Length: 237
Image (cartoon, rainbow, N blue to C red; front, side, top):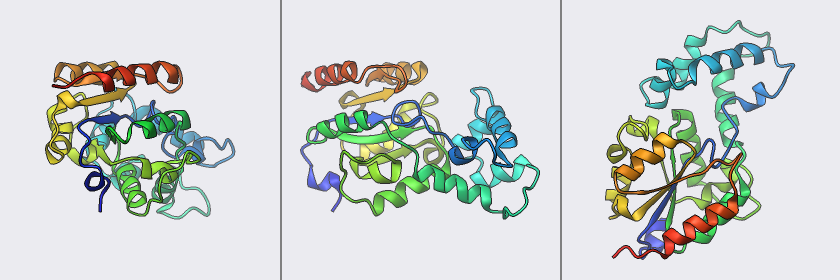
């Protein structure tokens, strides 16, 4: 039985962004954090080129037009001795599973679960979505000691990922969020989005939702708690 089936009375949803909000860890974190890794410099240069706001390759990766396998194949990195052809894909998957989470934020979200669904809504890649779903199927009940994606995934009632729906949040909020909302009998007026990007917050608000701009590296958890408490207390009737 799903969380939604167990708690049918919840009439709100909190959508929460991943990178910049729940986590600051990025792809291939274990390689990029190792100054002695033979692929580190090449990989960091490629990531810097692809994962920018104006990169067509990065946008296609996030929207599911390119798979992670295709992106890795196009890197043309100089091979490193002893590393197999699937090394980068395997490490990408492994590192997604151990991305760290902001434990203060997850504790706050856990407090809201009796009243609202908690759903990760992220512009992200296929490997991230696959890792999340596999971990979610096998998830133990969430505890406040959970410090990584794989450990904390039991907190969440679902995932909306751009590589699955084919659009990013800023492109078309109705298409990005609409499928999940329709499936759960909710409207965007009953939804809040926690996101670090102004563009995402703006379009969500323009479409009738409540947007809270919040950055895990900069903003106060106390301020977020106050804002969400005000939203939860507001009547939707």
